Length: 589
Image (cartoon, rainbow, N blue to C red; front, side, top):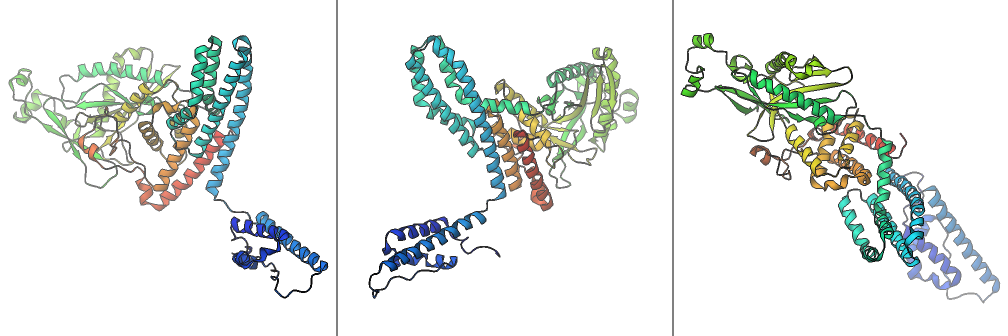
């Protein structure tokens, strides 16, 4: 490389050795021994510094002037060498990788803000503890409390430093480490508490919780800094579920003796029913209505293997069944298989094959139009129709409508599907690709995922922020190539493998950093495994068909592995995304 000085390749150990040898030369002239001088000759020649000749055996008679001149020359050589080395360190510093330097700078800034909050918190605690110490505690107990407080503060700072150095460490491991480090202090605190009064018990509690207060302050500041959307998801979900229950009652009466599919109770799915949503307005409340075959019919799911797709599409084949039994004949039903067509056409409604099917397969578009007719016809009979206005919205694969009362508005989407083997997996009308055939029913895992989030909500503490983390990142992804489902999958994996108690406010910063690291690593390795398909660590309460359980892990980032241009774009978007996250966390945006 042009312009590179010859000493740039020297290591720090070589430079220190040169300085040491020159300093020793001022004290003792025996440093010219070849055994010491030989190894550094190439380095000095690279520096282009003249090497004084070693003294010979045949020297001139001793002269004070020669001694002074020799010392002067050695001193000058030392000064020249020192000057050149310092100049090389100033003008040619060691380069640091951009990614590592940026991450290091970010951690230093976060650490500086943490130290500032620790200083403020210590001042506040000092003001609060002073009156308590003066009211009931003697000097020895106060000294013990202060010593324990200092130990806890020091351990808390060490815990914070460890969190910054390794963001992948689980919060539970950190707490275990702090507990082990504070073991002796905890024993002393127990002895103090046994002999202390109520005021000292409060003091000991404050000292014990000091290590978590700092992290909690960081989480509180970040929560206040982020602009959260104003949403009332629970109210909307409850209102939607009540409406669907009322619809279900009328569905049962209207379809009881028909040859249309039977409709079961609606299941809330999607982000709104999981208690989070990336949208601030126009939240869509999705429900999935399971369908069962009517009398004299049966459903058979066939995997569409005509093309190799990354999305599993099924077709619902409708088959007529014999109804020549005495019970069914007593109900006045004619068998579609064994009665003449003219008699069936005259005395019985058409079969499902003649209404909602195309070539013996259940048609999504026809089924959607049928749902629109049901919703419009039943609406006037519902109690909600007295105060709310119904507006149907266009859709070819679902039934969408909006209800308003002048003050509030809810947008609802009714999906419909067929359950697979009495499991939590369905084939539904919701499309997964841009152009989905009308007889294609993609496999959906929305019911299983909603079940997972409901179970997590039962286990999580009341102040858990796992949904806030998910909501924050999905809003941050707007405008990038990453989908909302990408972040949702990452968060579900993290919730499944780690304790849900580590998503509280004091863990907020670490969890955000963990999500960003997971996204960065997944983009780097071009792989993100699906949460349901091929996951051998799913909770036992999620029921899967046998083929889903035995399936290999499905890669959601398959496009990145197949298309280099897509991976390049994803890498660029990930870098810009992490920079935006940094600005938000540091209050620069």
